[in-house]
Amino acid sequence: MKKFLSVLMVLMLAAVPAFASAVTLTMGSWRADDVAQMNDLLAVYKEKTGVEIIFQPINPPEYNATLRTQLDGGIGPDLMYARSYATGRDLYAAGYFIDCTDVPGLKDNFTASSLEPWQNEDGSMFAVPFAAVSHVVYYNMDLFAANGLEVPATWEEFIAVCEALKAAGITPLANGVKDEWDILECFFLGMLPNYVGGAAERAKYESGEKALNDEAFVAAYTDFASIAPYLDANFSTVDYNDSQMNFALGRAAMFMDGSWTCGTYGDVGFEWGVFALPAREGSDTRVTFHPDMAITANTATKYPEEAMAFLTWLCSVEGATEASKVLPAGFFPMINAVIEIEEPHANAILALNEGKETDARFIWPAMMDLYAPMNQELIKLLKGEVTPRQAADAVAAVWAELQAK
Image (cartoon, rainbow, N blue to C red):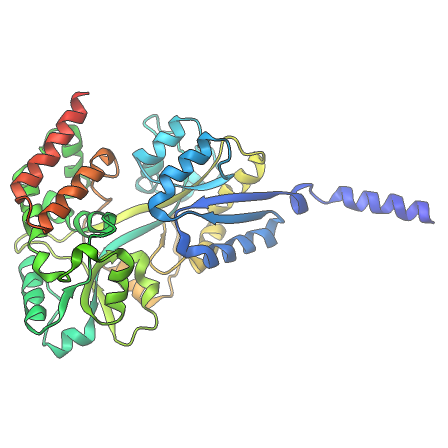
């Protein structure tokens, strides 16, 4: 009898997939704010498959460099968030990202425009699309109402609102420049399509058909510089967290930011809403709707089958639906399927895209080498150290030099 039970136990253990209890994958990410949410998603996946995935995020500004160091050192995660466009392509070209072209469901469940940000020049895919974000202005509805203000429909009206708030002793805009990245990514690249156009026009700048110091760019820098009087008086010392806090505490009436902040203001003591930063009178308002996050696998993972299985799940309607339930408000699934978003402010943000042309952040697809130069010129503009024309010429000169190499 004991021999029979021993044989039976061996047979039962053999019937359980080897990875069900033994396989543990790691996942790298720049979304350090999403630990609880991603753990919830990964718990759903573990319950479904038995595979455990440990979420190991890195401070966002340090993600690119830290991930590259890990990968170079052979200690990179099994799965990881992949930046869109050139930044992600570089890691694929270096041999670190797997070829995702044949992940089941990828080509069937995503549109061409959703695939393109993580596509190589030869059409192969280096990651699976996960979520997009939008750029909007958050505004304190109570402060607007108390001062008889309405949502501006043009840039001129936006500046008039800023002036009225400042005259009432209220800081109009919560943005600062201490962390540097957000004044470029959130504000300037959020407003830039209003001046230079959408994807088709962006491509002309990338090809050299249009110059980065043309009148459209000078106009964008001019209007950007005009917000300086409406920032905190000490905007040079205001970092991103300060900006969020100043808006949440009602110290500033507006905050130009990304949709990813949507869930941050669930318990503030005032009513708030969102609007698209408007274009100049007579021009069309456009929205920066950025393909932000994708997930890929490490070519050096010890568990390629399990990593591929997770990517396949993300490419399914089931996986995307589960992800939409736990992703923070303001991250929008990119799968080509109807997925209900319950959070009202997130729905309001997404609704701003309706009837408007959208595009990715201008420099992401092909001009990431301009990130730091453009960032520094913007800060100089706000400090009054350069003119809009000088800023435009400086960035154009950097790009010309890069192209000449």
